[in-house]
Length: 304
Image 1: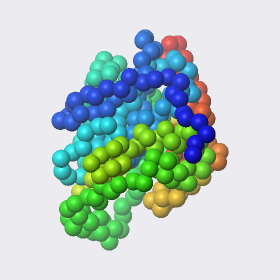
Image 2 (image 1 turned 120 degrees about the horizontal axis):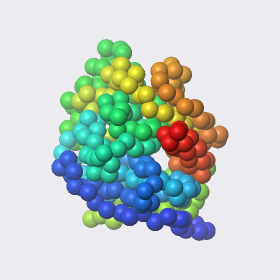
Image 3 (image 1 turned 90 degrees about the vertical axis):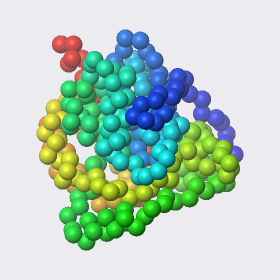
């Protein structure tokens, strides 16, 4: 049982926008004539993940959040894996929709940070500032055996994991808290509701299990690193103090200083204390405070 229910301070306008062949969920917290900020979630998450962050930010930004294809209330692909370059097309069309004529602030978490960073490398003129939240970047694929194994997995895997029924929203909330010990109980219940829905099988996750399918062309650091020189926009790097439980993220952790040194306009590196990978779940107020301070500084310089 939860003692309270998380109630958003600011209610988003929730809509469905059709672009790049699929319906996409877009949340909008409108503030007319204020700087635009786009929030991009990570793997298997949803746009709702930023609700507590938005609630902790001052009402001085015109904020959008996108649910990637196959996540949240966005439509699932009929078949195939979720190609990252296609998701960059989705991001491009999203930006064309919300800000066709001017650069905007973009903040991504985890996979969302990787995609935002890749897009900023390709279209730096579209990004006013870049916030990389736990956006370590992709792994380094150097060994022939590893490249072979990944290719083999792609060829041999033709079907995703089956959709399965969940016990209850409360049970999902408890799992979120076990993995994210500092996550507030009411907020965990809110996110458990956001990440699930009632289907013909009962309560299931909203995210498409095809996101688990291996990539034909895995994101590899060596493919992206030569482009990081294009990241001349002000950049903020935010990370959690606690190493994530995921083996891949632990492996990348040792490479962070080298990658941070490659950013041409790195404004600051902020480490949130006693927080893991899911910054916006465990410490939304601290996350929002760091983001707000950075955006205020960028805005102040832009009007000088």
